[in-house]
Length: 457
Image (cartoon, helix red, strand yellow):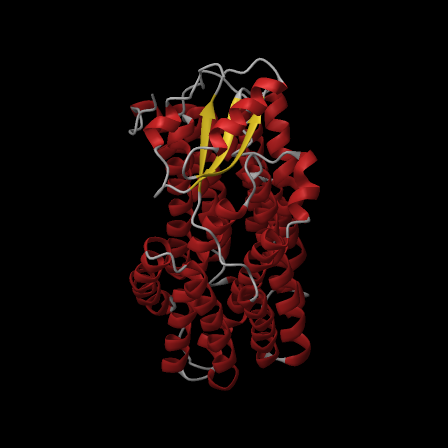
């Protein structure tokens, strides 16, 4: 019978892996609120190259995160994560020591090459039992959200103390601290194996990429991070040049906005999940993004309008950052969650790259308004896709350890599972000795379901 509480070992591993992920994301995001102001004075800098420097980490992250995850299956989690953090640290040092935009672009390219997200999630799966894994992954997600909020506030403050070069040096130090956490706080897992609920399966990519509901969500996270990166290319410049607020004081804008947006986001998440109003809340959030971008077009030079519209943007952003992974989990077929999340994460990083490069090019050739029009256009397309998506069923993933000898027993067990109230779909894998289920927790008898674990058919 599964325990409903984490062991101390699981708690420690979850906290440590969440910390490593947070330290790394803090490093990637901390320059976001200050870099465009700093970089425009560098030799040969253009808005396009500045945007490339901001977003280029997303390109290498998107290219390498799945291969690094697969490599960790072959040579071990800790060696791959250590290598990735070292690459990240080297990229940070190169960026810190560079006095040209080209050197910083190369440094950011290397930062993204330390693509350890998939390997970290695989290590988390090794260190937690199946019934605790969703809880542990939620903790990692929360740490990423908190690190982004902290980065927006800390970036301007640290810029005043140590400058952008100092921030890059600090980022490199944080990567080395992550290595210390990895080897000092995370025990060797009892066993390392492949986890379909946490890792991508190459043979499943075609099925996931042919699923129109999942593709809508992949486009959604792509669109969200296009807008985030493009906006933070121009927003520091707007606040300094048009509102005349020094960049070191920008945290005074971001801190209340992030705190208030988080509080105002919570009721919408509760309504979406508890009241089963996921689609209306989701569509509303995308519509709020569109409203914020459209109104920034005429009013991006007025402080109180900027504050109000950034608040609307981040309420919507927080709702969508929380809702999108939940929707992927609900919609992904049984045994394909890891692959679906891998494609989803890749889409997110491609969005950051396109947002930086595209936003920089538009700003250079057509000005600030073109950036907001670009973001509004992407929001409008996303809104159309959101309006036409199927109403998501409120389903949860459940994994059972089973004991079946062959395909015939697996099929018999699958039929038995599908006959139980609340079990919507089931995949029984003989080679893995597990069953992946989609269940309606309001209807299923979970105790009866768990009683089938490790019992022959």
